Image (cartoon, rainbow, N blue to C red; front, side, top):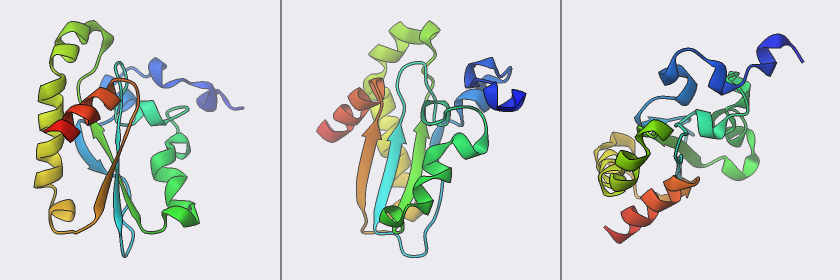
Length: 138
């Protein structure tokens, strides 16, 4: 393993690069999408960090591995990022309804999702599951 491969995402100096962008991020766009798959990270994670083994692009599996899987040929993949640093734990937990509203707004405002009839599948990790639960109750 090269030294760059052994670098964990937590070792990156720039938090936004380490965790990933905020908001709804389209990761791939198949020619004829039938499903919208949205990954929602948990506490202390990020739209990229939670779904990557390292900071190498090939280790960000929702973007690099899933689109190559024949079972995901017609799946448009997204990630959703929000501020979730452990130092913000009290604010973050009390803000789950706000994060859920932000996710709903991002889904509604996304031109590719708004103009489609595709099913939307939300995948959550940790607190992302609480955000998704709140979205489903909205």
